[in-house]
Length: 631
Image (tube, rainbow, N blue to C red):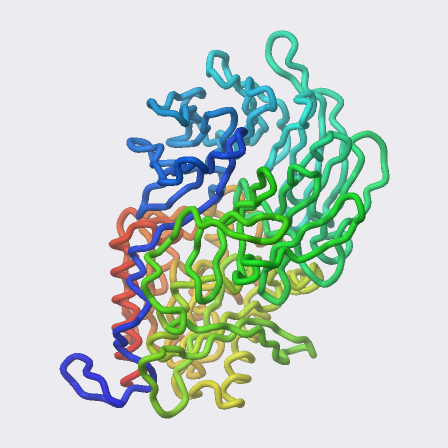
């Protein structure tokens, strides 16, 4: 079959210009954090509309969604953000412009209840509705803060002195709180601590006392503390067994017990505030998300018998879930699969029956137009095995002969993982005839703590080798064209792109780097507080390992890059500043290496504006046609 492209008739490698292509990427909504009000009937969630965050609410008896915020864009800015809002007692509490606001769900305007200094996140309302906990940072000093819900008093600090805090929560009696804390040089997936304390609200400024360490340490990562509904225990996720499993400890005394087991993960790398992977149901059971080999499912832990079952029913149609919230025998999540764009969905916890509250896309594209992934593994250096997700080309309207070009996608982090949910970027490529390999290289999460730790000291080695090995594996099995393969990634993934082109020139036909790290020295000195000591584990501490930093900085070997490359950068990126890309592009330009450089005004570490996303994919498509498809 032939198609017409730019007025030329060609026989494509793939499925170009399909009338059923699933993209315009700029038209979708980012859905996040469905949260029930205390009445159990009102659900509130966050929608990312271009560069704005809008809170939306719907009720059981009035299901038409209603936007709550108009003049204010909802977005918390502690670290990478997250923990933008909470709902309780008929009010929503949200962060905008560094302040905490309160707004009545029944109507009216929002009212600020904190002053505007620093940044805050993760608001949590006390059971009696009088107080709000939050995480606060100001001039690189972090704390757990508290303010009254009317905003009449000045905020107070309940816990401070540690480098980082996250995930504060209340005891159901309102007399105790819990939180997670950790210090440099650890990252939250390296080692964190779970603390509880009694809280004195009787007179004057609130204060915490009798602080007690419950779990964790420098070599154990703790995630998401939650008190049990009866107040007798506290649950959390710990990787002390080698996998992120759910534990339950008594509030008073010792003797934590593990509730889940097996080669699966119930936790997440805590890149953002407000993340969650489980929730207590009204029955006291735990509804949780389990991840295995990149695929997720919802499970229910029976707290009386200890049994664990898959939720099943309509929930089984999805393979990725986020932010569970429970109320009255149901759990609300953001759910998707490779063939189902994200939705806000609630499932009945008894049988899995579903109700859809919101859709992230129009869902006009038939499911058969989307590619379905399969988990694959391949041998890599050192006798190890690497993992990933393989998406074959897919379009029900077009076929073409020959092997497909391959896009090797490298996730950021580097401590992160690709999950088999809906991925517009991947579907953009597969519907146009590319095969896509999402590489969960050694160092990724989701495959146990030992697998994650393999990247310590090896960033710029294992990720390069595993991407190369995965591309070779697919070509040897006839699943991709060894003459047409592209490596693409952003941030840490962009570093892997640049370093791969430096160390393996000619292996990839082209590269695409989004705000990629090119200079490890300046990254260590210029990045934000959260990642200021990240490289201590990924490369080694300075100045002792300066030679490693130079060896793993593409800018010092940029002369070896000979393959065509497209570089994309946000001009206000504070994580990987623009200078990182400017330096690489200057070398490419001086040596006449085929390249494109796109800088997006008003964008930071990733694209939020619709016009940026649309322009980005137009440029990527054009670049690949010129340097890969028709080269």
